[in-house]
Image (tube, rainbow, N blue to C red; front, side, top):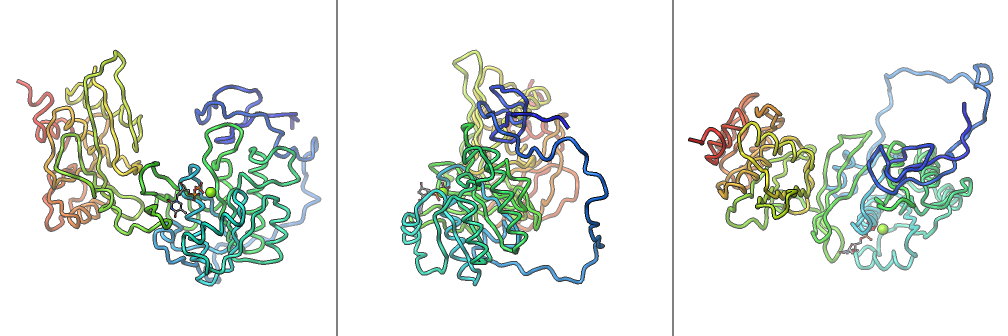
Length: 460
Ligand code: TYD
Ligand code: MG
C-alpha cells in the first residue's frame, strides 16, 4: 500500500483528496477542505497473512435470546423517532445547527430517562456545569437524578464512565472532545472520528447507550456530524427554521427501527414541548384561501402530516428570473416547472418563482409534486383552491400522475382536520374515506385545465 504523508479531507462529508481545492466535489460545499494527517496509517508494507490470527467462532442467525428491552423516555415524540425507545449498548448521533435546541432536548431527555430508572451521565464539553445547572433549573429538571460533568478529555471521560458504569451517557458535543492519541486539533476530522470511534466501541463493549451531539458546521475548520454517521446505529437530525418555534427531530438512519420517522416539538420559554398533532399546528394560522396556497396531505415515517405549500409568482425585474425554495428540493421545483411548461403549456419564463413550506417544515416526499404544481399554477393564475381541499400525487416527466402510498392514511388525516375534498392521481387502489370526496385525475394537463382552467386544453 502506498504511504501518503498528508491528505486533504472535507470537514463536511469526510471525502479525501490528495490535493487541496476550494470546493468539495463530493458534497459541493465550499472551503471545507483542510489538510489532515492520515487517520490511521497502519503497519506499512506487509500483508496480514492467514497464520497469526485466531479463528473467530461463527454462529448462525437463529437465536434463543430475546431482544434486550428498550427504555422509553415517556416523551412520545422522541421514543417514536428512536424506533420505540432507547436500545441498550447502542450509539445515537443527534445532529443539528448550533442553537437549534440539541442541548435542551438532550437535557430534557436525560432527565426523563433518569426518572425511568436509567443511570444517566451528561457530559458537556461546551458549557460549564453551572451553565447546564442553570438551564436545568429553567427547565424545572433540578430534581432529576442525572449526573453531570463538564469535560473534553476523552481519556478522563472514558475512565469515569468505566468507574461509574452508567446505562446512558450523553456527550455534548463530539466536536469538543479530544483524544491524546491523535495529534490534530479538537474539531478536526481525525479527532472527531477518533473520539466517535472510541466512544461507540466503548459503549458496545460495556453495554452503555451513548448519545453524541454533533453541530452542523458551515466553515471548514470544524468537522460536521456526517463524518461519523457511518459509525453509529442511529442518526437523528434536529431541524427547524430560526424564528419559528417548531422543531422536527428526524431519523435519517436507524438500525433498530424505521428511518424517516419524525418527532415534532415546540420551543417554549420552558424548553421543548411535544406536539402530538403536528398537522393542526402547521395549518394553525391559515386564513381565508389565497392564491398560491395549497394543503398537501403528506406522510412522515408512519404518520400523516398536513402542511401548507405557498407559492408566489411575479414578473421578474431582471433578465435572470429567480427560483427560491424554502423547505423543498430546488431541483425538484425546476423539474415541475419544466413539466408544467412543456406538457401543460403553462410558461414560467420571465417570472420569479418563490416556494415555501409554511411553519419551517422540510418536505422530501415526491408525493408533494402535485401540491407544488397546484400552488404554482394557483399563484400564476391568481386563482385560489377551495379551503377544504388537500392535494397529493407524484408527477412524472411525461406529465402523467402516479399514485402514492398510504392514500387511506392521508385521506383520514385530512378528514380529521375538516377537509372534504382530495385532488389525487388516478390508478392504484382507491380507498374511500367517509366525508372526503376524491377527485382523481390522470395527468397534469387535465388537472391544470380542470382545476384552474389554464394550459393548452383551455386555450382557444
Ligand atoms: P440549545 O439547546 O443551547 O441549542 P444547541 O445545543 O443546539 O446549540 O438551545 C438554544 C436556544 O434555545 C436558545 O436560542 C434559546 C432557546 N431556548 C428556549 O427558547 N427556551 C428554553 O427553555 C431553552 C433552554 C432554550
Ligand atoms: Mg448545545
